[in-house]
Amino acid sequence: MLLWPAVATPQSTDRGRAERLLAVLVAAYPDFLSHHDGNEIVWRDGTRMAFDDGRGAKDFETLLAMPDLEDMFFAAYPLGRTGTPPTVNSDPGRVRYPPMFVKMYGDCTKGEVARHLVDVVWLPSKAGQKLKASRINGVAERLQSVSNELDKLPAEMTKYLAPSAGTFNCRVVAGTQRMSAHGHGIAVDIATTHADYWYWNRPDADGRHVYKNRIPWEIVEVFERYGFVWGGKWHHYDTMHFEYRPEIIAASK
Image (cartoon, rainbow, N blue to C red):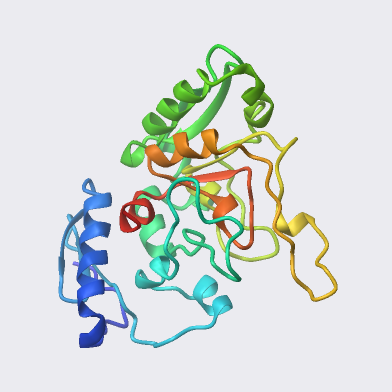
């Protein structure tokens, strides 16, 4: 049995929230997670991981660089046609706890992710582009369902969707050493032609990146129905980016 370090007990005032989020996390990944026990999630193989690492409040950069499971829920994801423009440093779903994602999907630098990749046909009648996504947790199946629904949208939507800029890519997030969600095979980038990304744009005179988006809500709604969060609801916006994060969607309901 494996035991992750830094097992801590949440403060009693936060216990109700922690219990709810622990339950959400277990329900989101039933193939891997068995139950929660105190401050831990318990995997089906007996592995335990702490929800709260006991380090207290973290600044934004620490949340990204050294998160625990609880930190993944630091900002609520606004479902539906809400949440834009986001408030400063509100990036719901951008924080990921690496040990959980590596244990589920594998380490792409060791070839562990590639063995679970399967084909998804992107926009079957309009593009027919083949993409790779992880079969784990039904990601590829859900992405295919997304694709099939998007394929039925009016023709004027296609310019935002095709060609897709890709899915699996064993790389770090631009400007960091953190593994991208693309490295786990759980993310897709739609067409870049009408996409906006904070990292590409110059900050204003106050050092802020002014929010930009051209992606229609109809596209976002389809992805969200199948458990994908949208990078367009991040302060550090990435409007082409969608990733499978059912726990983030469920926690916001």
